[in-house]
Length: 156
Image: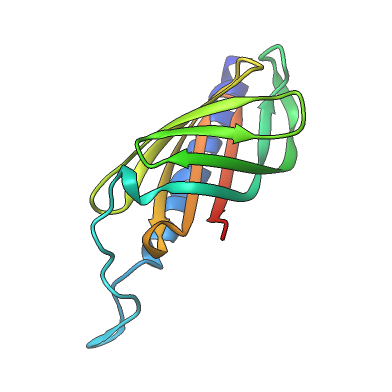
């Protein structure tokens, strides 16, 4: 079982790193000599993320509820709505029995770290990039037993 857990965790980390690398490739640089693909992002901070956000979360459970590795990863997709306060804190807005909170830290280069904790006891750790001055957040992460990606859009 240890080999399966290590293999699943390694696979999850590989997927998360690959996703972040692909995100990074699309955020700047030049496509042709002297032609910028994107404007240089303005400096970001926790204050860049403030307001009501909604989006789609997708991923794979690699372990069952008891922590035992699954023979085949189990895909999932859910919608989420978060309210972020611009000071590094978030609250999950949901109508189902699961509630949650988040803490986040935004770096000046518009990358950051996100930790979400749910009433079920689950905690997820993700890396993210802020786009459009805070209008979009793209996240990816891999904790033991879970591979997750997430996109949030600021609501009008």
